[in-house]
Image: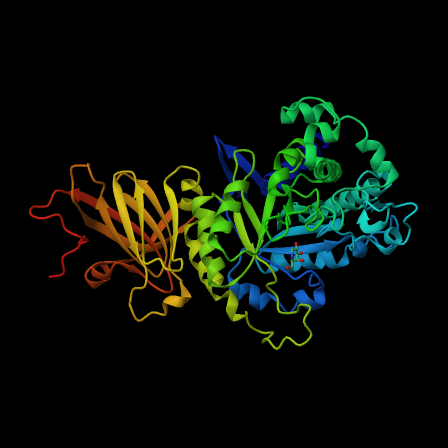
Length: 539
Ligand code: DGJ
């Protein structure tokens, strides 16, 4: 009887284990990163709430808008001041509500830990931390003045944050490991110190006077020495980066011990305007501190990019800097509007991003005079909503093509009426501004083009005319359409919705609502002159 019971118990445990979806995970194959959620390749098509919106009173009114946006992931803060109102006493009421309601909406969650650091300050620490600067010391600036930033060299600060974060991860595990609604954690928010390039408290000065730790010297391939000897003019910022990265790494490591979700921290970039550390949070994972962060914070999967620049040159340059063999690109915060709708394509197609998300998606933000309709999505998010509706139909091939050199994004920038893309054996010309009556100032043209096989292409996008031609020197001068299908992918499965032919191919233009196309071609050597653009002859 006992044996039967044990057998029953074991098989029940096994059923539970197998029923559990696998942990979300960022996997690396060669130099390519893919985010796996529920065991499938995933792209975060996200939206981030305003800072003070992760409360039931707000989120309960917001699901309509999330639905309109078509995001698959909501990024929402968890406030240290709320989850630990008294030392060691925890409250997860609001968090549980958030997880359960997101699950009901079929949305995934990325939780943002607003703990010791938020935008280079510490305003989300609980009052019992903020009021007791003796026990929970602050950084000091170069004049010896205490500032609104917790000191990263303080063991008490670190232990307090770490304990709260560990409790948070235990809570997430308890209520979510059977469902995996929460797929990733941001540890702190735009860490660093505003108003000072480093911590000048006595405790920090004592550490600064020591040699740079051997492990960092070794990882960065530097010659041993003091901070100024090794880093010169960048010594204060490098020191701050080291202290903050170690602090966050220890918190992340402890959190992962409780529940091993992918973790990252995000950056307030230094490319905004002023270049001096302290005018942006000094010691954050800025573009000049990536190596230090990689060396000092191995428990973070990635350093994520927050980017609000509407300039495509700066946007692309920054993506390029954070898309590295040791760092998958993820953009948890970006602007909205048509610029950023285009930029999402660049991030995914040209820089292999595992996800993108505009900031401030709910309308319940800080401006009390905001007259926006609280029922519907703000019009500025239209472009991104269109992106999400379309991109969701092609996640599987996009993630497969990323990092292979066979996926390229194009976009209609000011003064640009065409863009030529060269793929293996084919050139593809995109023309913007078709039909000509379209308002060019909108610049809504954007697409991803991927090469699925020698003569087969995936095209995902909006408002761009396309023309294929065999590459010069290939021995062919024209390409015939063999089959052009519009449809969607369900997992790896292609589902055809219709076939394009006749006028559709004469115009060969991605519509304003977007389309996912699979295009099969045949290279030919046609008689007569080299034809300018005809893939198709209208009879
Ligand atoms: C970047 C921060 O990370 C966000 O939390 C928010 O404060 C935005 N800036 C506001 O623009």
